[in-house]
Length: 220
Image 1 (spheres, rainbow, N blue to C red):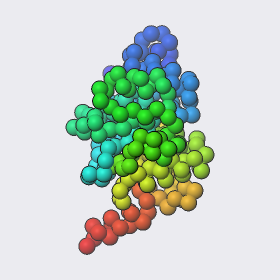
Image 2 (cartoon, rainbow, N blue to C red; image 1 turned 90 degrees about the horizontal axis):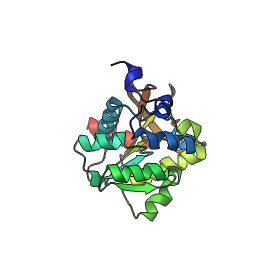
Image 3 (tube, rainbow, N blue to C red; image 1 turned 45 degrees about the horizontal axis):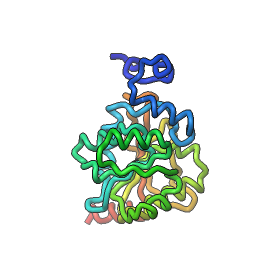
């Protein structure tokens, strides 16, 4: 099957040839293009790779995995397929229709409707004190640096020491600068997933001092 046959386009949706599950995603993109990024759900290969990368980075006993910008739940499904319990997933999504779709698709999934850039307030309102790992699909290069730094800072404060944010991007450049508005980040390029439209780059970010402590401990 060719790439253009595997992927859903807006034209497919308008012609009625796309899966019904894609409709809320495209409508969400039309309502909030800055928060959705691009109107294409992740491919199955990409979703599995993202879930694997996050679970490898998650802190044992640190709490649920937090998914920022869950969309229609492609990666949510990949987490569950990898054996991660749905009760240990928290999806953050701004679009109300996508939130409803996530709740209907995944029984027991905790869905937080709101702006992920106000992550600290969302977590406080939900009394969610700790998370074990974070996946971000937010279009960080299109977001003001102070708002991006606030989001990342809130995420790191919610994780135990050594926690990581897995960030994906459709651009060729790193999605977040290491010196993001006062945050000292260690950035690791995980790889590029070509079986996605458009191709997706996957990055892992941690606090630089925490990354240094892990490296030192590994060498002892």
